[in-house]
Each structure stands twice: as C-alpha cells, then as structure tokens.
Image (cartoon, rainbow, N blue to C red; front, side):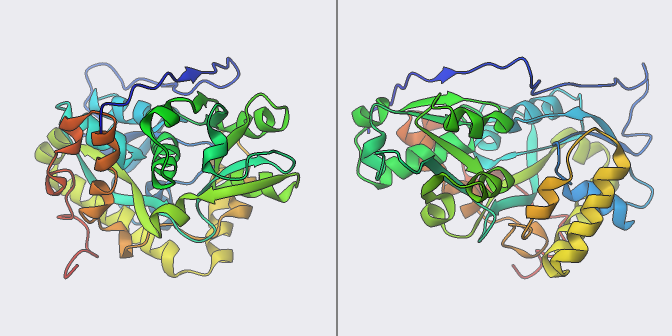
Length: 337
C-alpha cells in the first residue's frame, strides 16, 4: 500500500505537563555505580519495578523517581539520553527508536490486552457513529500521536476494509488522558480511545457506548515493554539481571495473587509515596494484563505492529528482525518458553 499521509492535529493543554524531570543526579556521580535506577512514574499507576521494591525483591538496588510522564515515547527518550535508566512504552515506538539507532533493548513485557484491561473506542450513546465507516470525516481523541492508540485506530479501520484515502479523513486529536472523557462528553471530539481505568470509569458513568476494543482486534497479547540501555546492560550486567528478575517476580506475583491483595498493596504504595495522585485507579484494576508468566517476550509482541509501520511507509521499522528487539536472557520465567 502506498505511503499514508495523514494530517493529525494536536490539542495542547497547559494543565498537564507530559514530561517533568524533577531532580537531577548529583554532579559527577554515576547513579548506576550507586546501584540506583532513575525512572519516571505514571500517575495513579504502580510500575512492576515499584511493586518489586515494595515486595523486597530489589534487594540492594534502589529506585529514584524523577517525575511523572504520560507519554511512552517521551519516557523512551529520557532513558535513551541517560536521564533515566529504564522506561516503559508501547512496543511500536520501541521498534521505531531501535530502527533509528537508539541503543536500547526491551527486557520484559509489562502490559497488554486482557479481559477487563483493554482500550476501547467510545462514542456518546446518542451518536450516529455505529460502525468504523461512520468515523470518516469525524475526529477521534487519543492520548499520544504515533503511539499505541493511533496504531489501534488505524489497524481497526484497515481491518474494517477502509482505504488509505478514507482513513486520511479520520482526524486524530491528541488530548491528555485525564481530559479525554470531558472532551468527548462536551462534543469537542466525535469519538475517543480510552484505556483501562479511564475506560472503565467513563462507561460506568453512563451516556456512552463502545464501538470496539483492542482485545477484539488483537486478542489477549503483550503490547508494552520496559527497556534498558544496552550500555547499562553491558556495564552493569549483574544489576541489569537483578532488576529484570525482580520485576518479573513482581509481575508473576500480580498474576497469581488474589486481586484484593494486589490492589491493597498498590493502594498503600500510592499513599506512601505522596505524589498528590488518586488511588481510584487501583479500585478498577483487574489483572496484570501480561499474558506470559513474568512478562517474558515473544517475537509476535513486536511483529504484529510492523505491518502498521509498513502501511505508513516506514519500511525501516517494518523490516526489523523482531528477534533483535528484545532479550529474555534475564527473565527467570522464560526458560522453556
């Protein structure tokens, strides 16, 4: 298919800063030598590494939170440039950055699509939008351009048989996640992609309906990974291995532990870190949304999205060897996988 050229508009908002590095490491100090891993958090979310720390799995390793982000690509950039040690993102931008020469490697899956933990395309109950073709000429709010939700919308429309020219007429608008539901209800956009907590709470309030979900499109699958810089893995192999092992154990703990126990610990973690965030997301948490034990990865976790890049004309990302994008070398649950 010919290269797709789509005009995307971005709705800026001064109320939500997507990327803030709160503190810099002491001048001249190497955090890795101090066995410290700097990272960005996600408001209302407990990362696998944060859970591993609370469970005591990290041992002598320490985490240093440097601020929050709401963008996987921005998180990747911070880790790639050395402002943080690890980052969390959709596998699409990870592939694209590696294809562009970023020296990073995916080390474990931390999220994906699972029953009750997915993204949906939402419209007002009274909307005339009933099927994918009805989105032609309409606007759809997503959280970040060129990332997971844009991929989902495009692949959903392709699967429904829309042509590239027709898809060009669907305008994607980038809106900060906390504002997406309001933008939809106040008719600033015609439809919106909402994920996990934001999806669940919006639907629970009523007046909205769902066209489709990413789990309906992809099935249960790993879609998001944590990356480390290859230089960190090379220079600190023991710490890199321990970090991945501890995080994988935390993911496995989530997978096999009763939901009430998991959400209780998550709530305590959020309350104790005092970042001015809500604990409401933990009340809607259902499962780890990682389909493999401990988050070990497979080629399909990445290759399923390469056709989208090829469809957009990015042959470099589409032609990457998926085997080279990740490593299961440090994940204790990958043996025999």
